[in-house]
Image (cartoon, rainbow, N blue to C red):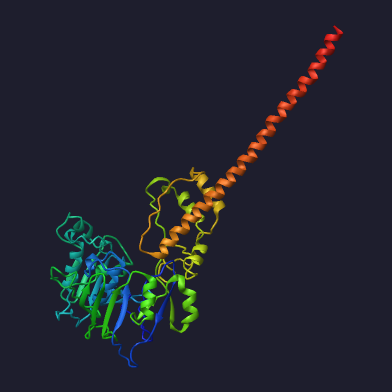
Length: 441
């Protein structure tokens, strides 16, 4: 997350790359020679939806929430689970009852102490239907959370306080990964009585304090000197809204950004001209084309397998992402726990794709709509590559069908001509015989 600042460079670990792309970040050190960095300038592609964790439904909001707030647990830059506002936790043998012990001495940015009641009220607030958060799933394993979120209960029965220093969660069923769910932005802890404009002027326990937000332009933060995890090295952090990758690169070169992801199309240029500025890091993200498997032909697994076989992922990685990635073998990146190293990605095989389509009952293909975001340049190029591949495959398919038709037509002509010749030969043979018979008569 953005909160993890590398000690040697002005680099925040982010998960903005795609298809396990290697993260290239230009890293100018602008500390003035000391250990203190006067001010860092980062960027987001879009304005956050809100700074309220309960409304964290997009990447910019989630990243800004991680600067201002803490969860009971947190992830390090490599996706490893670490303690957060809870310094330790235990689970019963079934992994269905968890006790989280809270870190002592933690205060919110306004000086109020952090206590167990803040945890319960934060989670109930997220689950409250009136909040309209939309991403409550990390909390739904808690007993009674689903009923409360859907308005069928007046309380969440699975949350119990043990004084001010511990919280007990009882789940509807065993779930070993529940502590990881509590590291999600939506599960960040907020004060028990947030203000009406909390999403615009937030107060948390995180490493950065809110200063200002000029929508669609920038957000400004000041370091939290009393942060329980150690104060950030920089005095301030400004997050600018810069949608275009090429603009971000230019702003970095002009000294107006502390870090920037190199545009994929300029990878070779930057590696050649500024190799000593670059830091390469594997991203914790997968890019995919989502298939709606509840409608039409996409309900058939063979159709979905055919689509995977028909897409030339290595070519897309090479042409769109300049080989800054690997083909995904599943939904979990290799660097995250739970990934299966034995899985292999789909091989590009159009012959097998056609066989699967025939098996599904679509030998001539079918119509499907491809929707894409209009703001992501690389994903737009992926969509174009997919369309080109589809057209190329359709043309090849038509050519093969035409060739098959020509071969079949020639074979049919041959079969038709042979009987006709035989019939003519028969008639020619018969006629002389008849003539001879008539002559003899």
